[in-house]
Length: 227
Image (cartoon, rainbow, N blue to C red; front, side, top):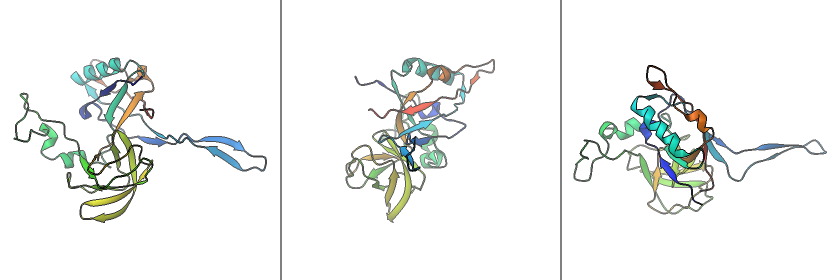
């Protein structure tokens, strides 16, 4: 049965600590009879994170509702893997940071806000599942991709471990883990990675607060790899 996905806005998961980690889930199998160490690694690495949220008043109520709607680990949470050093969201968003992106005619919604800004590039050429390289065009943001930056395609995050070639606004990138979704020419590649996660400790994610009406829950997240 497909698990329902809850999308959490970027404004709700800004954190005081950046600690996303790619876990290959390696296990020590112990030494062999001739004293050679063995290790098993999973064919399905996943991302983990423990962001510490800073919530105040209405944001506490919003996050409380998210935790309740997650129903423990029953539902999946879609959220951005915020990483200011890897993706300078504020610089990329520019004038859209505060008000969002308007409609093509320049109009905003009735509340004066637009669509949430999401930095992205476009895939150049097709890339199969399992590929360790991808070529992207960064023209939509105007900001080149850098080594160590986390990107995603179709909610599958990956890290750029090398910029192999640059031609104009097109860059060929080496990535880890390998691509876990097939990429078509022109597909959107998010320059701030998005992923699908489950709450490892739903009770610990509860936003308890004191009289100052501030909460700082530290949530443990684990990527869902059986999408």
